[in-house]
Image (cartoon, rainbow, N blue to C red; front, side, top):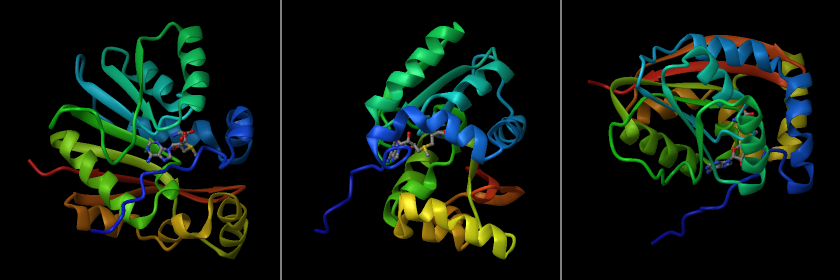
Length: 219
Ligand SMILES: C[S@@+](CC[C@H](N)C(=O)[O-])C[C@H]1O[C@@H](n2cnc3c(N)ncnc32)[C@H](O)[C@@H]1O
């Protein structure tokens, strides 16, 4: 049996940099613009459940809650250190958001529970095998007909975007980021069983192209 890689890459690769994560992302990625666009795509009715997958410092989870305040929002991340920052932000906001520790390819949730799963700046942290394992897990926990919304590094729009993305690759590694910049996330989503996979938008940022994808679980 082949050994599975169940480790994870922290937000800025090294734990000693975690406290810098929020300002770095805010100033380099047009964070508010693409996260707001992502959340606007989702339909979440009151009392339905939404998941922020690999929530990091919970910036996205807080935005989801603000824009869908009658829904139940959970954030999950593999890193207890970054979750401490998330917990502080959630407590300060007085929002009712649950934060869990856990890995994307073994989610501690029952089948068919979430009406939307969101994930930002995350899939480029995973090997191809773990991207597939994660996509299968997301498909398992999504309700039939519900969607996964991803914003992550995608195929570069031009040479400038490809060149600036090298900074992300130098930090997070060339292996896990190759499928992203190769534009392969949609293909992997389809291979994993998602339907109607669409790239909804592309953003040019200081660190390369961020693509927004939507993928449905069949009814
Ligand atoms: C670049 S950060 C993105 C955080 C947040 N989603 C955002 O948009 O700011 C990537 C996050 O993925 C988490 N992570 C990496 N691999 C993971 C896995 N397999 N399962 C859960 N979390 C993981 C890291 O701990 C980190 O918080």
